[in-house]
Length: 175
Image (cartoon, rainbow, N blue to C red; front, side):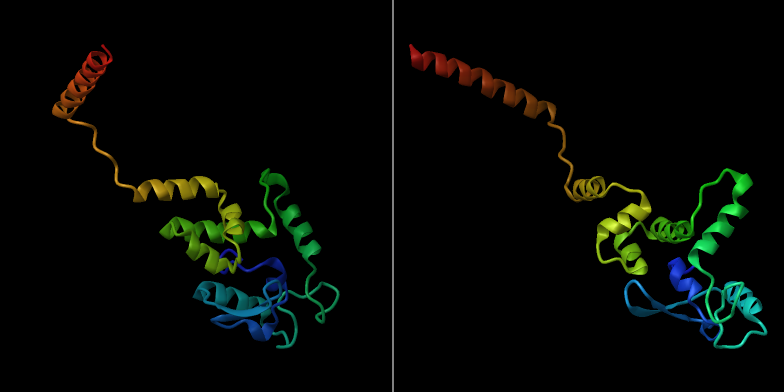
């Protein structure tokens, strides 16, 4: 999940025959099939994990039967048990968020992250990155404006004399 940004349900639904590079995954939430390139190391680990299993079985099978995949609650329970002594809060979705943060750290382009995650709305992407969308937009707007130069001494003196003579002229006209 950290390498592909896949959701836990999509990972658990992988079958042995799906373990290829690129990884062709049907994403249940978006109802789309997407290709994810994975590293050779991950491919080797996944291949070793499914070695000797029938191609129609689930890669992450239920402990009771190969005809069903591991349930997400079982995964969460195992994850919590593994992290019990570490005082570290983590969930299955944490890896997807880490995937998003890694992309954003590389190129600082929030739209690349949105595309990689398959988000329809940019607000969902900003919640993954723990950034304030309004502040991000304001910062981008400020960067595009050309900074104004401070006035020179001559400009300050001219401005002073204009104000000075304007006041005198206004006083003279009233009399």
